[in-house]
Amino acid sequence: MSEINDNVILEAKNLGISFGNNHVLKCVNFELYKNEVLGVIGPNGAGKTVMLNILTGILKPTKGVILYEGKDISHHSVPRRCHEGIGRTFQVPRPFEKMTVLENIMVGGVFGAKLTEKQAKEKAVEIAETIGLQDKLPLFASKLGLLDRKRLEIGRGLATNPKILLLDEVGGGLTETEVGYVIDLVKHIKERGVSVIWIEHIIRTMLEGTDRVLLLAEGENVICGKPLEVMQSKEVSAVYMGGDEE
Picture: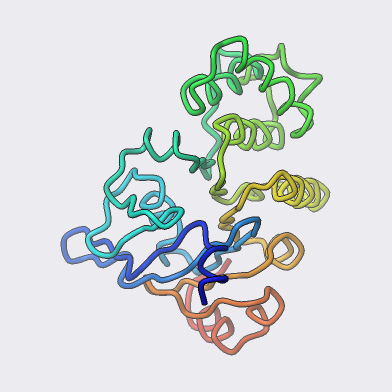
């Protein structure tokens, strides 16, 4: 048992949040292992993005705890969690439109990883190579298309030097070819030693890009396991046959 626990980098225990009488998350439990990509699926309204907002500190849970490297971080601030190694992307990319690609990535390094400007610039150039934006560093972010905005969103998250990167539907709106690129990029991020929680509606990303998949429905975790087993499970069929479409 201790061997398994030693490999856990993040754990949610009985996590819940309510807004008045609206219980968005009722009781969510899961573990994220070191060097793992954990996919998260669920119908609209299941609480997926709310869960990410709780993990990053944007929202405070009504109940339950978040353990990061064995320590309770449930009440840590957003900046503190970022400095400790939890980075994220947003479903709708939010670049600084009037800043260049280089400057956007540097923001993550300076404010997230507390690097000097010189260090942040060196880091940004390295990350640009990883995400495929090395030729667009001088461009203003406002000039980027959707795929490059998604790349930049991931790049800013990587610039914070995370141990865990939370991805919120980075494949949304992309073509099949572009989705394949994102899957390869996530695999490369894992190879860098970063653990990933990846929310996505695109089934291909979950089957090809994750180690395990967690199903959320009605504010609770329903099933978690190997991607193909989860996707073919009766639990997934029941949730999607009777509710929201992807």
